[in-house]
Amino acid sequence: MYPHMNDDFLLKKLDERQQQNAFRRLLLPNGKTDFCSNDYLGIVHNGLIEKKLTETTTVYKHGSTGSRLLAGNYALVEETEKMLAAFHAAEAGLIFNSGYDANLGLLSCVPQRGDTIIYDYLSHASLRDGIRLSFAQSFSFKHNDLEDLEKRLQAATGTIFVVTESVFSMDGDKAPLVAISALCRQYGAHLIVDEAHGTGVVGRQGEGLVQQLNLQAACFARIHTFGKAVGCHGAIVLGSERLRNYLINFSRSFIYSTSLPEASVAAIRCAYELLAGMHAERAHLQQLINTFQQAGMRYEKLVSDTPIQIVIIPGNDQVKKVAGELQTAGLDVRAILYPTVPRGKERLRIVLHAFNTMGELEQVIKVLGS
Image 1 (tube, one colour):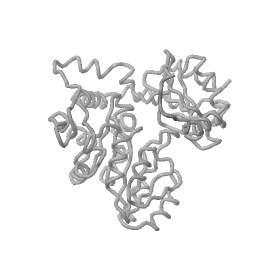
Image 2 (cartoon, one colour; image 1 turned 90 degrees about the vertical axis):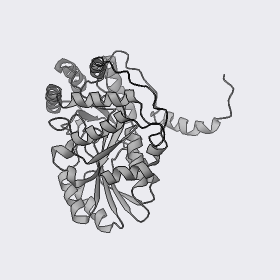
Image 3 (tube, one colour; image 1 turned 90 degrees about the horizontal axis):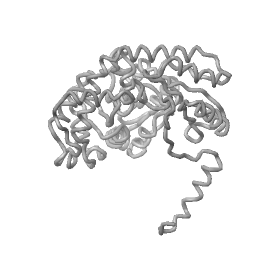
Image 4 (cartoon, one colour; image 1 turned 135 degrees about the horizontal axis):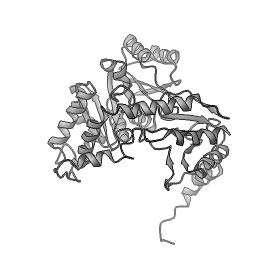
């Protein structure tokens, strides 16, 4: 036993998780076929960034030595921000160290006391944590429910912010952004869209749902993260040059973090140079999605035209049992348990990738359909 201070007070909450059969453990893939990572286009699986970076003789530093406001700013990161803003048809952008940092930094500092934040009930934890740190009042609206959103807008005071995701990570569905942006225009609200799971996958060049719908001018801010289809790490908040300057001055997760090093930013640039041309990968993904959606199985399946496919299997015990069957078959599918999702809505989150073969998908369907 290692000597340590008494930590028995941690046991109560840990025991509760054990009793719910919801105790989390870190698992290794152990060579199973990947149906759980967010590497939608296979940029990581196929080592595409690494291959592309070997074409250059530039040696990129692995440390940035400080925050952007001190020693950690450099030409490559500013050039990359301009490049990404142009790709996403935005005036300006500011890179953060992660999607979590970006959401936390944006929402904690922009809305002020007396303002109102209205957010989709299924918004990611990082969005909700940023909202919680804000001094503004906040209210959720029922998931993708325009009537409920309008009721909230009618009662809102101060500067109003509406927060949603383009693609929802635990359901695989999309936000009705055309209708949401129309309501924001009607009530003078500022629309913030997290494109984490749309980046790279949605749109002809993987530009995301907002641009696919030509709604970029309707958004106050967009967040694109790089840890999913983009295959590296970090995030960018896109908006006006004024918003960029505001975040540099008031966003604590930006101001007080050591900046990403050159090596990380070079990987981001490299990935974006690849993204636009990955038409074949996106087309294959769509074939896999269509096949899965049309397949018969013994459980409820949510409608989704994204790589995130959801099969509802109520009960932590039961969903873990079925996930175990898939794991035994060599298929890395993970169960999403209560309390991460509501009780009775426990599920398998099956993620499809451009590198998954039709044969591998048929294996998944066979286990779930038998």
